Length: 128
Image 1 (cartoon, rainbow, N blue to C red):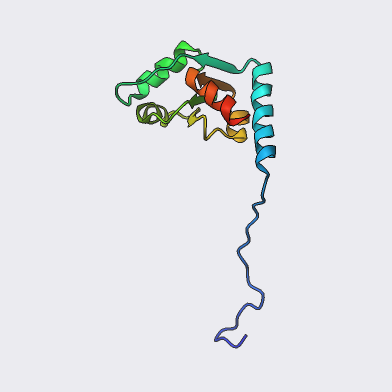
Image 2: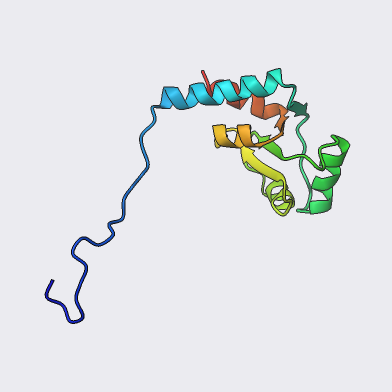
């Protein structure tokens, strides 16, 4: 290297450490994670609901009615609802996702899974 002050011959190279995983394997992992949570009695199913305005207090009231205030929870919605997402995103141990975006990591990371009625059919349809 003929640079002023020297140079590095084999400098750091950015690498992509990701790897491809087949869709069937991902679906199997998601299905296994949901089965594990079901056997562990960590799934709660609630009726469809919506919030008129994005209020964190309403979401905390929902969690306290299910007695999940101090647990790490994952709420699975059938479709994205802006008011519910805005209400729950400020809570430390609460995560909200849609059935289409449900990941194995999210399922296993949550202590308690809260499924809204419409999301069950969507998850069932996605995993078939």
